[in-house]
Length: 186
Image (cartoon, rainbow, N blue to C red; front, side):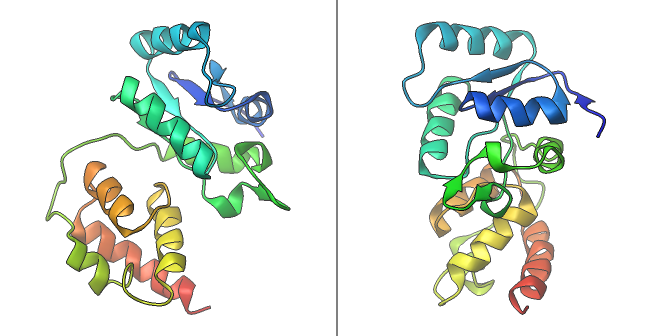
């Protein structure tokens, strides 16, 4: 596989994550080494943010989302890349290090940034109507939706915040739901 070149620095959690991302792309990769981000690491991330931009690619688990929140609070214009859980799992271990370089490349090709919706804003009622809340398989359906839209997984409220924050319109959501419906029937 030929590595792609990207301008932004990619922020990951650990050295094993760096190894898989290096096989996918040619760019600066910075590891936070967990929650306790050292001052030198913050300074390195800030420099990359100002000079070239950053893409946050953390594990699709609770810890990864907490680290993502911490980074996004400090660097609000950071781009966000998400890897679905099913592409980042090996046995009981969930993490970027378990992904293939191709899956990492796909996640980085589908980065999200905060923007205004280009169509009708999605409401909680839309999420209920489309089966992402209030039904027995809603969590499974949200996981498929997260994979299709290349966003993080969450409860209905969290996903609604991401959908609207990333400017995903009701029309895009309904189109993604067609895909989710096909996948959830299998």
